[in-house]
Length: 342
Image 1 (cartoon, rainbow, N blue to C red):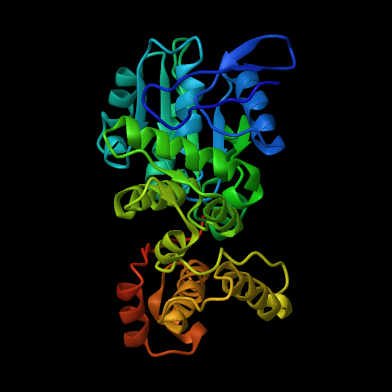
Image 2: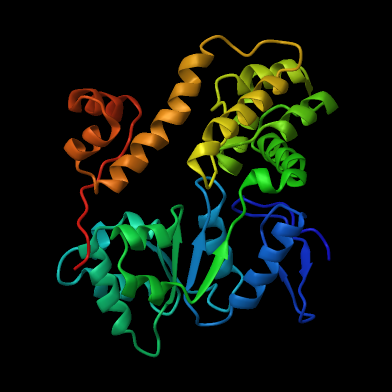
């Protein structure tokens, strides 16, 4: 199987990706790890079906890119590709207007669990009334939809209408061998856009591979773009990467199934962060960076658990309500009042 390469750009260079049924498709994606090859095969199999597709993955993994690739390399490629917003669903004619715009192309609901329950109900009614010339329906989500179902943030009937095929996009930390390929891709693209030619030296590649990339591909792209601008030499070395990464999130999202192992998980990530800097110390201000990384998801999860009720959330956390409001503002946390489904 050849590598699918030159991805994440408007006019990608294409390489042939052989799939199991002896057909081949050109997918504008970068990655040759087993996880990405499995994703390519799944995309190739579903792209010309009429099944709805649910693309899941962490923020920054490229969910929208996958949805777009499914459209652009399918037999619907010459038809419209429409990404629906909450505003598009408003009014008596909102859903019908969306269908008119999408025609028999593709209609995508981005971050579907963020939509209000009223908007979700409109989607369900729209999907139930689809005719023979309906568009391909796709949706994306960065959140655990089963968890959203349990909390009442996602309608069960909508979930089963959208989840014909689920395409899970792996986080960057689960495809470490693709990181140098992606970095090279972003360097090449920056050069084509007029930036000076740059490349990562071997010591820089080592540190880029070791970092956990909580913001995934989007974070890597932003870091590479910054390095291209700030580097004064053709070769980018470890100290320059360390300086840029010093202002990035210190640890990856915590992923532990048991609360009593939380401290161990934090310790593991912190040790890895210190190891990232070799014999040097991380940039000053580490205490506040670490607190922010832990504090933000704690408050977000507590808000979800209390359905956005800030008074209940403050009581759950054991902090003053004014303190909670201050933290929500400082950490730029989105608060949505939700209600449980009857």
